[in-house]
Length: 117
Image 1 (cartoon, rainbow, N blue to C red):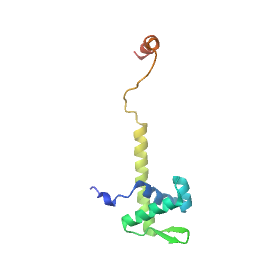
Image 2 (cartoon, helix red, strand yellow):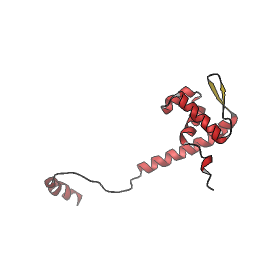
Image 3 (tube, rainbow, N blue to C red):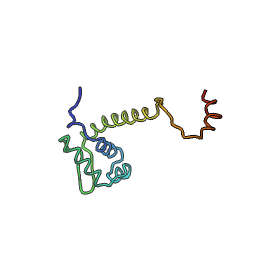
Image 4 (cartoon, rainbow, N blue to C red):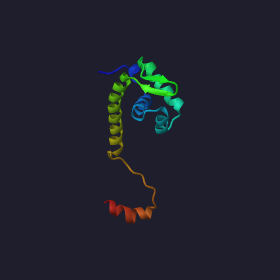
């Protein structure tokens, strides 16, 4: 079953939520994701707005995840790991193809061609 795209949050916002669950603070998330704290906060707010659910309790400068957010994050973590593994497998699997070399003709005929044959 294909989910409507309006229910599919950005990977960046999901990564921010997962990192917040794991690291516990927005500053640590910002450092890990190489972003500013305000960018992380905006991503989390956008995620909450898109899902229509409060995921984070904000108290002064502290963020605390709701129980719903923790359950959601457990599922998201598995999905992010699957995407990461699939991407890594794709880049590590040789698919064949062509290789273009710029070499001197004499070197190609006398050294390279005999070794490729």
